[in-house]
Image 1 (cartoon, rainbow, N blue to C red):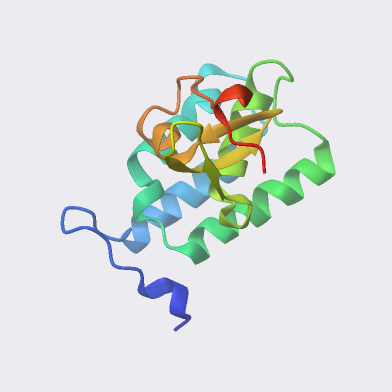
Image 2 (image 1 turned 90 degrees about the vertical axis):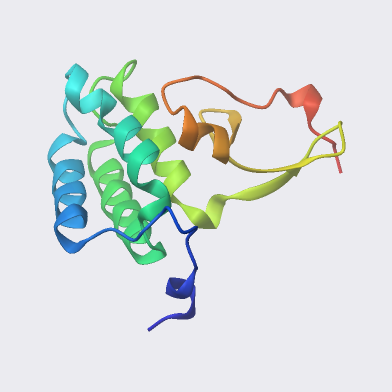
Length: 142
């Protein structure tokens, strides 16, 4: 078993059961190109309720599937509604793109970049429907 799968979760967070993973994976594959309220908001529910329970292999599989879809079709659903939501979902799932951002207040924040903005990962997981990002002037330039 790869080393990265041995991450210990807090006591109140448990790994996905096989049937939960199958439902998430299949719903993402079904909804990723849709243009409805349900398909546009699915990423919010998955990030909020399941992100911390997914292992790195599951996240990588979703990243692969979403990236292949984006490469083939160029966008997710409606350009102005669905696409930004799904791109942010994809960026948050892609752990290889996560960075530690040093803030001017001396704190460090785990974040990801998408749609020309930098989003704090913890805030996105807690409130995915909110457009909370880190303003450029709050970031220490190195």
